[in-house]
Image 1: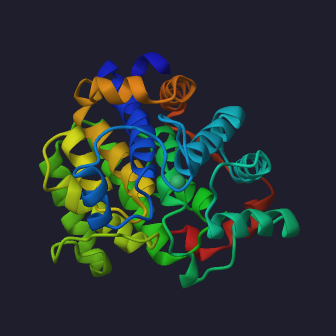
Image 2: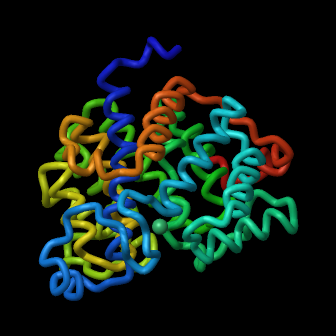
Length: 317
Ligand SMILES: [Mg+2]
């Protein structure tokens, strides 16, 4: 199966995974700062220098990349989208005392541990960006799957910690953008897809004033990402634009990075960022990108939740 994936798709998948990690590492320095504070301190923040409220070493990534790697490891271990394996992998990751973890993510993992349930109850309070930020492994492993399979796979991983219509919709659109880019569509074609998405979900309309200091709300996060993606023309300019907005900058950086990486390819990633990224992370991301593409089109294995999901309308469209 591996040989059936075209070389350019492999290269873009790797760029997407490295883009996620680079956006995370770059943005973490200025997470929770306002755009004005960033300007005063850095003029323009454009190098991976660590620091920030988490006092990171330069090149160190945070939960966005780590949860993606945990999700990817579960898909590779079971060679399928197995929701129990994914929940276990998230739980193991939380046990490893990560440098950062979001409240909704923590609550979801504790809910799984206490109840054995792989979906939190549906709630608009679950509309944070914490499930979207780790979606890349699903985008890679479901490349070439039909739409229904992609939606099912996405919601299985998303609902472990976040279950809301906006989180579902935003995450599925990010998968769509990554897959369009992997299939060779350019930034203008991605923009057309986002316009159709916004027509269906007007909450995500991003054409108004510039979003600064975006919070963890999926709508604000993706508005900032769309504005940066569709007003720049390279991987570097997109990431610099998005992280300098401040707020949840590691996550806007991570999501913009995975889309821009897939769109512009490996050759467009600045060498200084590749060199500054933690080397172990760089190797893990590159290897997973390759291995996850080799899984595509992945199978779904819902495990103990099979019966429940078969009768559950929310997985049917
Ligand atoms: Mg983070």
